[in-house]
Amino acid sequence: MYVVLVYDIGERRVGKMLKLCRRYLNWIQNSVFEGEITEVKLKELLANAKKFMKVEEDSIIIFKSRDERWLEKEIVGLEKNDLDTFL
Amino acid sequence: MKKTYYLFNPGRLSRKDNTLKFTPVDESGREGVPKYLPVEGISDLYCFGSLDTNSALYNFLGKAGISIHFFDYYEHYTGSFQPKEYLLAGKMQISQTNHYLDRDKRLKIARKFVEGAAFNITKNLRYYMKRERDLDQQLNRIQSYSELVAAASDIPSLMGIEGNIRSTYYEAFDHIIKDHAMESRSMRPPLNEINTLISFGNMLCYTQCLDQLYHTQLNPTISYLHEPGYRRYSLALDLAEIFKPILVDRTIFRVLNKREIQSKDFDFQTNRVTLKESGKKAFLKAFEERLNETIKHRTLNKHVSYKHLIKLECYKLSKHILEIETYKPFKIWW
Image (tube, rainbow over all chains, first blue to last red; front, top):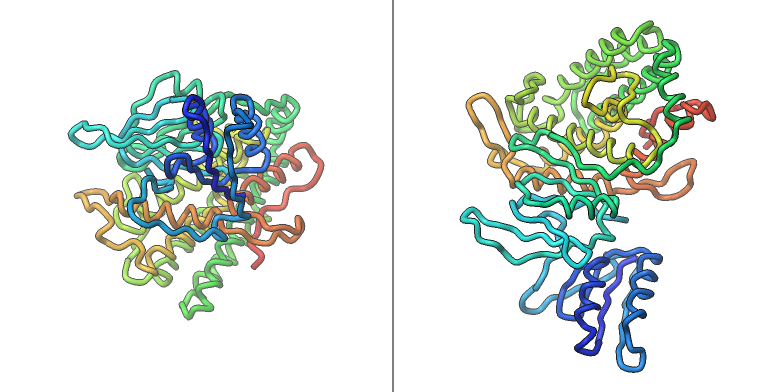
């Protein structure tokens, strides 16, 4: 499964969210991550996020796609992080 | 599926916030923009550049089950860091050794490896014969060699047949590949472009097999066709025989015939030819694509990648060793 994850989270908790997402997905922009992930790993990520989220204030939105090739991605301006596996 | 990362740039890999942080360093020692690699999505790392790390990182990688493979300046495989064995099985170890010690049992497995390799080689030749290459002579010779496999009475003669098949096969390379000449196989060091690619590709195939073996209960040091030696994972060499024609040779034909790699991607030194970084990257890209390519498996009735085929091969071998099902080598069927 290929996902795009965006979050809007209170300033005090945003650092935690960033660190958590970095473990599972690739950072592409402030508060935006994307990458290949399994259902179980995504559940794990969300379970961990719920531990520190305030559900009445914070939110996470996940756009799911079956495969990367069904996702048309267009970048205008600067690409902040390209997702190459050749470093 | 978890991804393989290839590290070409020199830099520092460290543990940061429970994930991996890679900071590239340029020639003058200046640090670049750090990049975070999602630890949960990594299967392994291939390290070609020089890498700065510390033991905290290795502890972390060990826990996450990620292995790193290292290669020296001349792209030789130098070793791996692998997390501790997690699929220990004494029973398997005993039967595996048993199959090695019993002459007949060992020969039976070794024959299968040669048989599989020969079959996949002829398949490659047939493919190119359909594309109007004159390979009749080589094909006939390989076929007559492979008829000898069943009659081979010991390992050295089996290895001899395997060697004959390979050298006949390499003669065919000159007809298959346009623009480049293979001449003959030269190793340590390779003397021309094709030989360099063969060495590089075989090494990748070998590490790939080793990686898959790690995820099964088989012990990679006890082998059947190759003699188990010291300090080498010879079972990976055995397995690689079957997959080299499919994974490595096909990739070589592709990158050279489609001109994805050209003479400018090589570094010609007085007594050896090495790949430049551009060549390494282009080859790895093609190889990676090949590994992730999927085919519909006949008996499993689902799509599997070439990478997964290697693992299935390990499973078949374990079943044979535990005497559940007789091992049949993988033969390309399309």
